[in-house]
Amino acid sequence: MTVLIAGAGIGGLALGLSLHQAGIDFRIFEAVRAPRPLGVGINLQPQAVRELFELGLAEDLDRIGLRTREVAYFSTRGQEIWREPRGRHAGYRWPQYSIHRGELQMLLLRTLRARAGGDAIRLGRAVAGWDEEGGQVALELIDRASGTPAGRARGAVLVGADGINSTVRARLYPGEGPARWGGTMMWRGLSRGPRFLGGRCMAMAGTRACKFVCYPIADLPGGGSLINWIADLAMPEGYRWREQDWNRPAAAGAFAPRFAGWRFDWLDIPALIAGAEGIWEFPMVDRDPLPRWSFGPVTLLGDAAHAMYPIGSNGASQAIVDARVLTACLLEHGPGARALAAYDETRREAVNAVVLANRGDGPDRILDIVARRAPDGFDDIEAVMPLAERQAFADSYKRTAGMEVAALNARPPILPPAGAGR
Image 1 (cartoon, rainbow, N blue to C red):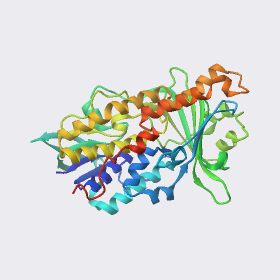
Image 2: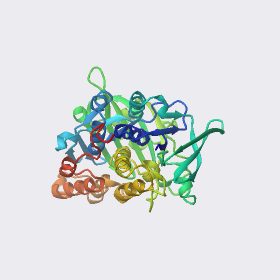
Image 3: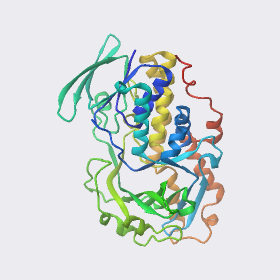
Image 4: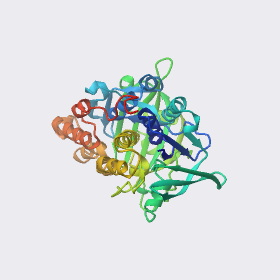
């Protein structure tokens, strides 16, 4: 029986690739007629990279992304607070990647088409609604651009992988309303700059109210980097934030003055902002954790299930793990309500904990702790926040996010090798 998937984002495409690997029939319906490589940089954590490697994508990821070697936190004055290795440098069997979100999505799309055929993905088709008939799901599809009917589809289950503004989620939770804004606006940009801090570092500076995050996503000829950066500013109560949109252009004047003095010995942040090839603005939003994802033959995946703040680099990573766990449940129980319930039981509470941790600023909270203890800067970070405390802080988030090194390295594969489930 066919698994019907709403949405061809990273989660939906990872699910399609996983189902194909397991020999389970599926169809993906994507509202966009011609997907393009939208967005800017993201980080893929080792638990997600492991799953992509097991889908045979290791060489492709090395081609379009960079292996992150470390993460580093700095005060508003540019003083180092904490630095730790990442990926294989931290002992994982798999790397961490800094990568362009759109390029990753296009890679998954190309790979899925090559492996499963073009008919596996129906573009320009959005889910308008569904009925449950005889234990199956009958979808009503529309062409979102024109609003006209676009046929029907029938399958064993429906997976809503249609993003933070999920149509499937809205049907399951009709009273929920829009995404939740926490008061922070974000400006994302891409700039050409130096290979700072060794050229493979993800750096964060400031506090929750005024934070700058940056990391390279590609090497440039001559020794430079293409740097993805994010500027966060807390806005006053009553600020009129608009609907979230990855592609709303913005001007640097709205936020750059707050970072005017941030010229550090490791990076000139005002120069980085001034040299941006493009800047995009949107509010930092998430959704409240749900008490249930699966309702009979219908479930949710990725942002549709657990939209979270982009803190701790876990949004896309958790969606990829969702896809693998759901496929394993479908393989074990067969496409039906029992498999979706097992997936819900396995994943929901664990990922809800990540949503709440990120709402509390996740691992970035270390910046505010140090700022409160040393508002005028420090000469010795050990006197402000001892190494053992910093390490314990970082380890706590790893446990919440399923990123513990020993546990991930020891865990057996979620799915058997290709062909074993056929």
